[in-house]
Length: 145
Length: 134
Image 1: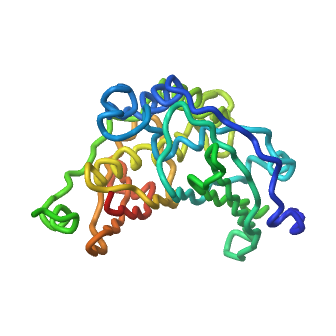
Image 2: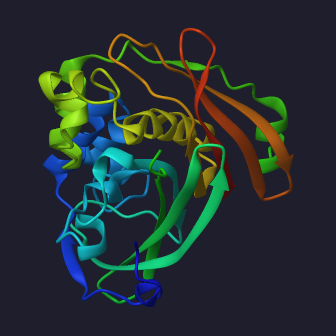
Image 3: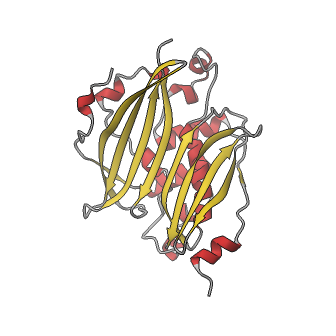
């Protein structure tokens, strides 16, 4: 179903500008009223260059969907796990270079048939090309019953 | 002198009780995150799907936990790792509470087990956060 030769192949980088309005909207949707996401002066007082991007903010970086993802049967697709590893936090006004790859694909057999696990990594880099974060998502494709 | 370790030895962290999830919130989160999967926002579509109705974005519940983890980090800590497993569906009307338990503490690092539970006590999201001294 998934061609294992895609494992480890990095996509062409995409660039995402981190905007103040996007941070405010994201925090508002979560119901998170921490002023570090809303008040730039407050954020600067906390040592940040501008509004802080919330921990899960990289999920807003939507680029072109990869073919393997487009081809998944969305009715059998589950989001199993999500992980953020930060080298440092980032803020509004930064430009993040995002590189994506499938880190692993494996199967597990259970009472509901064979489930396929797809581990996708997205790495964010800053304008000096230093790594800022790694986002790891594990998707599960349920077996056909 | 209060050290990083003292802070986590001496502070108790109250649970974070979120307001009930609403459909409007799911629309807001869809817009803010860019995840427009119809299972979260299209009532008709969701009703006719195997799930039988709208479910919240797992990433919204992770967002709740992110708000909580940021509180755990406070002034002295920096969140290094934040990871979760999605365990159960959240639907509109559910009330999510975020909880944490200190698992490991060294001079410059605190590791928490974290979870989000619904109003019935079911764990919907569970995971771990590593906070290092800023």
